[in-house]
Image (cartoon, rainbow over all chains, first blue to last red; front, top):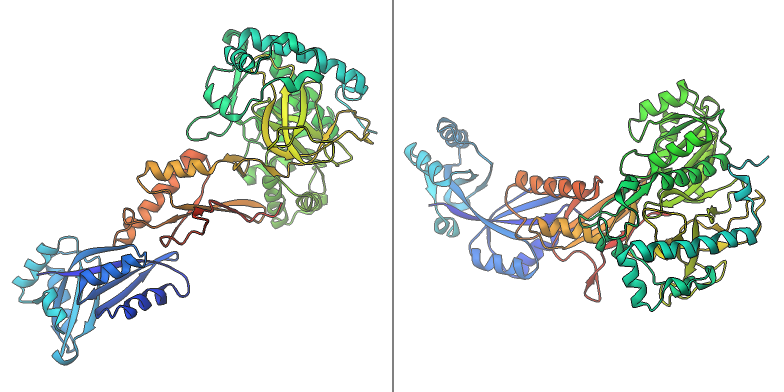
Length: 143
Length: 433
């Protein structure tokens, strides 16, 4: 059920992100979600794309170090309290979140939550039991 | 009035010095031929026997010895005395895990301490002085050497060793230390700390400092002298030869007098290996002619210096060498510690990372900084920031145990390290010395 997230190592200096987004733009990589985490020295860009294989190939060709990991994606109603209900389910299940990020789904009227957790399958089972709407790669790609 | 520790030696005529050197060299060559198979083999390969060496004029017939010989011979390969006659070892900071271990008989230690006593006396030290030795004690020669010299001069010796700045300053003030021995960067650091405590030159009892084991500039000397209200003297030495005191500065402060009754100095062109004249920079080569346990013949120090035989106003007749201007190999001296880029490479390779790195050395507030920039690799990268930080720390720890130095490790983008003609530039030394 999970989605594939690409992580890219970036130096923390002016222009470093711009160089990477240029590669993605030049190669017409269609992104669904984008998030950037940073320390004082380096950053990690986390991207969800339509075509994972192509994105990794163009990034590697441009000498970027990448890794692909599984994450849980959940569709939530774009209304006040929508995020809270999913987070409540995660808390109830005793799951520790590494990090999350959210994006809006445009015409679907939904918001989407991407959760990085140590145990993807366990988290998905717990969320499904609570009636959460889990999303897979294909569904995200069609947004 | 210039003072000497051993006036009859330090102001001997050039003829006398040459006579000592001739006699001692002949004896030393016979000593190593008889007792060190490694030397005998080297000399046989060079087609020379002790009979060919009748004095200093013949020294060029002897083969050179390099650090590689010392490493190959580790630990006993160049030992020239029965171990039961040896009383001490000292050791350099290691390279790729192998250190240089130097052995001393009691006589060797005696002569070494004499050399240090000459340096302390040249800096104005007498038995009325209080000498604080803030060089590290232990395998490093700095502490033990100056400690012994200070005893010989009769100074009250404070063996603080390095570190614990507050305690250093407390002893300097409470026991009225008049002479300070340490690395120049530590002296500058102590000076800054005293300044921050609101202590001016008049509040600091010190009158002289003997600073060595790393490169320092004339500007740094002036800064230290001003901050602490002292006269700062340079001292030179290598563990391979004994330790500090191979050469030392006098009141003229225009170079360091080489203790020529114990060491024959040559300066050569590192490429052609031919001697260069006085005043021309070249690689310094030493022969230790009085060492019993660990004698070295024509040891290539890799330090680039020039010599001067001009008469010195201090009255000493020993030749003077300039401060080393650089090295003829890739060794870096960082905070007094010898660092080869290959050691850093070894740490990375041992941890399973490719050796894509660059060393950036700088001097911030008079202290050397070492920044090892490592190119991020797929092996090292994960989506987890905590894990990357842990791997970074693992490299820092590995470098610390290999070099004995705390280095900063920066992770940089792949292929971001400058490559000239395909070869990565390994070292960027930004220090202005």
